[in-house]
Amino acid sequence: MSAPAVLVLEDGRTFAGEAYGATGTTVGEAVFCTAMTGYQETLTDPSYHRQVVVMTAPHVGNTGWNDEDDESSRIWVSGFVVRDPAVRASSWRSRRELADELAAQGVVGISGVDTRALTRHLRDRGAMRAGVFSGADAEAEPEVLVERVREAPAMAGADLAGEVTTARAYLVPAVGERRAVVAAIDLGIKSNTPRELARRGVDVHVLPATATLADVMAVQPDGVFFSNGPGDPAAAEHEIGLLRSVLEARVPFFGICYGNQLLGRALGLGTYKLPFGHHGINQPVLDRATGGVEITSQNHGFAVDAPLDGAFETPYGRAEVSHTSLNDGVVQGLRLLDAPAFSVQYHPEAAAGPHDANHLFDDFVTLMETSR
Image 1 (tube, rainbow, N blue to C red):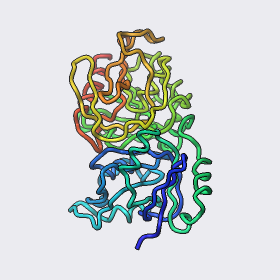
Image 2 (cartoon, rainbow, N blue to C red):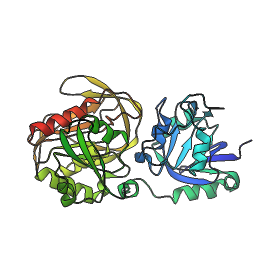
Image 3 (tube, rainbow, N blue to C red):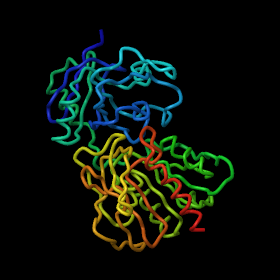
């Protein structure tokens, strides 16, 4: 029998359940993830740092945990909320149960929660701080637990890339003949991203978020890449300054997710917090140039505020919004028309997720080759 647990939202609503994973207390921003599969990649995505992830799929843990699908060196979510955990894993690739891995890494979770009601609440009220309390910690008075949740730092204004980035630079070498060299700034990069570039003949030098322009230029890059990551883009002053230097040097640039938001701010645009963000692997995006639709993997709570009609002026020439969300019209991509730079708000490495946007890595390689 699992220990009792309770999920407490900052607006005072509570959900009872049972401990899942580690027992104790955790706090973070509650967000819901609409992915039906890929929970291992979700849990190890550094973009989920300081977030309590609610899985909308009711049955989680079916395929257990393996040693191949991690997208980073550890689980990054602050807490994990599921409705109906699998009794036992059923996959030839599984090495252990999901609950055991959560416990081993100290991740406090809760099961037996009405995740449909919780998701509807977050959709209507917006993402908010939440706490998961299990075992003895769940026995405190509700008002005490609510106060502990409200004392947690908000996501707005949080500068978190430095908490998830690599401690030192490393190289992911090109597979086959080398076609280009990329300096990839790790703001919370997923493992499959440099692998996708390497498969296309790219030497990928993954650099810490603290990297300077001198560090970037030292690898003699044909292009610069900014990864996904957690936090408020308005707080990333160092990274925005670095990106402006890259644009001024006219080095080809490609950014995804957090990197898209940072390109927006580098261009002089604003960013804002979405009510509940986009978290999942089934997000439809419109390519405004072709009219094509891609189903994409996304994980972000902030978006770029940019003019949707026509080109607009920036310090680096004209730019335009290249992609938009078909769910809510949010900006999903930016493209400079007078400089070699573009970005998207989603994850073309698709781990987990559909491969509709995988061609963007090819587009980046082509941009680097034509810009030489």
